[in-house]
Length: 346
Image (cartoon, rainbow, N blue to C red):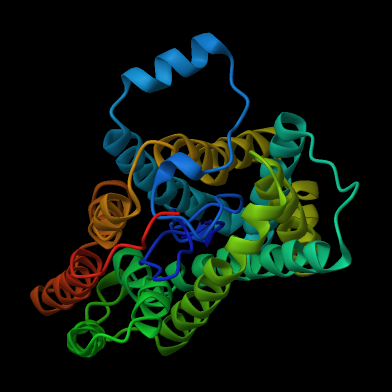
């Protein structure tokens, strides 16, 4: 995820990293304000934290923070499905992004003073990619199992990583990932006992993957232009505004005609705090202490986390052939990350 809205995101040889949306969510990821062109987490733009908060976060192992971020993405996505009925997919997505934007703006208080038109255009495009990824991921999981959506979407960052490599072996990892997707599609096992996957759901997942790739490419410039959580706050705000024309009327209609509007708002707030708010904060904290390669290896496990959460929260299970396909995609990502040559440090 989903999506939605966003790692050591871009380096000269990027690795597959999470988004804000969707997954993965995770970024994915990456985060909207982690600077690029870096091989280690130490060069991530600092976030102002209290001394006590910093000491507490430093006592928690960075890999644990990264894994927690993956779970918050998938839990946020899974619990958001309860809002699809009363608000619609677009309405639930719009409400979640609006609440997340309000929270992040209050925390980061970003300033646009001194930013060039190019920097403003870049963060706007990043926000549009984040919003598109979040909405497409949600539309996909309404039609196909969450684990399959997350795996297909993961091809976005994996494709960016492989496209930047000139190593012949990485062509083999790309072929392995492609085989994994074929297995996912051919093995059947759709929602509600269906023997076939919904074609539109797969199409939405592929579109979300393209948005995630665009998100990763745009993150480097935003991370260099904005300090701390400021880039994240601005990009999520743009994402909320981009989705508002599509989802705003649906959300308003659902809330206005519900006999429990405050409960729906509370649910939306809870989901938004899980993802993207908690996800990106956990990722940013972890990235200051994790090397890019270590984070890439951890992120490769995201499709597996999506399958686990989908099973535990939504009761979704995958066919053996689909699990094999997921394993192929994860193995391709792990191999591409481990065999990647580290970027020389400045």
